[in-house]
Image (cartoon, rainbow, N blue to C red):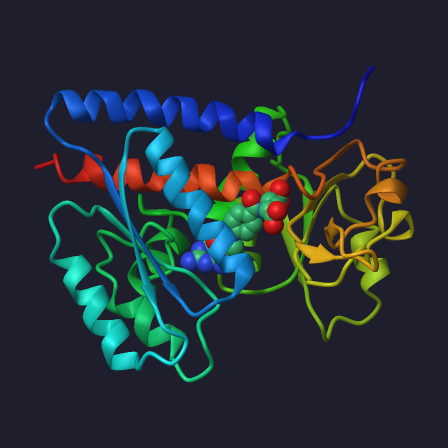
Length: 284
Ligand SMILES: Nc1nc2c(c(=O)[nH]1)N[C@@H](CN(C=O)c1ccc(C(=O)N[C@@H](CCC(=O)O)C(=O)O)cc1)CN2
């Protein structure tokens, strides 16, 4: 049976297989890549994600530590934990799971992570480097989307890419990466007038708006590539994306499902970034 579904699990497996080989090479040189994951509070989705991250590290032969802090931890204490990880030689990558509780200033925490260990690619120095095309850590979700497009032989050069969403962790870097590959990029957001008129022009539509199944076939040009970055629960508490998959798959040439699309890629690219952070310590 032919399918237009892009299988994120399959692509993620290829990425992690490659990372595993790189880890073996590093270990032969006496270096085990190490990741520290910091979780604040009891958000159950975040708990699932950080558990998956440390389990994947284990599977690939990497070292990992999970630092769990109480929901009411002070910003100061969180910053002290980050500082300790910055100074820990066994740790090459640090990530603070987002979102953080409201009393903590996310920007301050992200800026406290050493740019050399910022495997999320959220530190302002690394964001700046990405903007000007310098080698750095690329935020995992948009990095994963680019990998999926590459594995699916989708050339973005000259294509019109429309992105719904302008968050720092997905929308903004997504547009930048597509631009670097010569796509023509349009950003849409909550103040965009006539969203459908915009999305209908997209050859590549990336949806990260945070509303369950909002984008149906009526928003999609025939033959467009549709990438769904949303993670929501539907009326039956079933995991779903921002795209109404059943309707959209009838018009899209390629489409990512939820679950099993972009999500697994986020963790795979984190592994790639952590491996890169360890490799970087051997340079110079
Ligand atoms: N510090 C960070 N925080 C957050 C990031 C991030 O990249 N760095 N991204 C998201 C959450 N996230 C990773 O942290 C993430 C989200 C979803 C998945 C995933 O595999 N989803 C599965 C479904 C999983 C489920 O059953 O719930 C899928 O789509 O198939 C992985 C990672 C926000 N915070």
